[in-house]
Image (cartoon, rainbow, N blue to C red):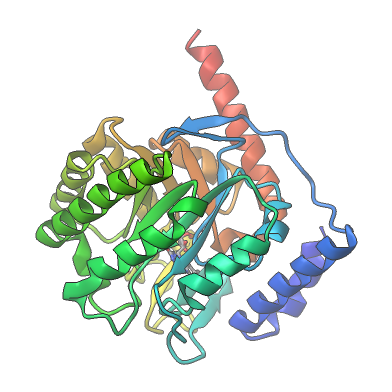
Length: 346
Ligand SMILES: Cc1cc2nc3c(=O)[nH]c(=O)nc-3n(C[C@H](O)[C@H](O)[C@H](O)COP(=O)(O)O)c2cc1C
């Protein structure tokens, strides 16, 4: 309700400035204990060997530096995914780099992994009191040659391991040159082999096996889906997050900003993301958990992802258009679905 009043003011600002302001404000009431958000009781979900209090998570990129986890946790999410974080700090692309397409309930972004680097990221987490399920999404620095990308992922995995509930290997951002090439057979094989071996070693050292998830693009053909699914299975990757933003422009043709370079998110990618999710569900046959993300703007859309094979869902663009009430709406819808599904299976 409050968000309906704030939205026109926020939408009058540059999109990235509005995001920074919202996160700043979200932290403020926490200090005074004033934030009141509609909380919905959720149905717990077990996936990737973890227990989630409900199925609805925050997608990566919303809190790239893990600087607002306590405030975001108060919105009722069952889990938070923070990052993408890279080994070293980097500024990302020049502004403006985030654009709203309100008539399509969409965003286009070419942020380019702007972040404060893994050490500052861990310092932020050190200050947070959040102890819920925390996904940490890792990537490579823009100036690391793509042939050395695995070194960056390995460096991040090593540093974040102790603090993560699960770690997401992001090979699907369209805004880091050649990153998506890491989804191709040979490169993915080498990357996952290295990270899986490193995870085994870290698991020994820390006495805790942290699940690994792979985040994929919605712009994959069936052969690519099969290749990625085979690699996921071969290396014991625990989850697939489908999907990141899209390079397609279907559904936004002719709108202001539609021709900006970057990844499209929100309503226009919903079907494409869900189709990708369903393709992974068919290829993986339950051998890895699926997290559905892309274009969820209502509880019904969240349920659509579950019906396509996801155990969990994540939100980003929907939060910009619908505000924090979307979280409770999705939690209730997912809970209702799990209730009817368990009644039907009795
Ligand atoms: C401004 C912005 C920044 C993003 N940054 C990241 C990121 O750093 N890492 C990542 O894995 N995904 C990132 N994403 C992708 C989202 O996590 C999500 O996969 C995508 O937007 C589709 O979901 P949506 O339609 O609900 O937004 C970003 C999305 C947006 C809009």
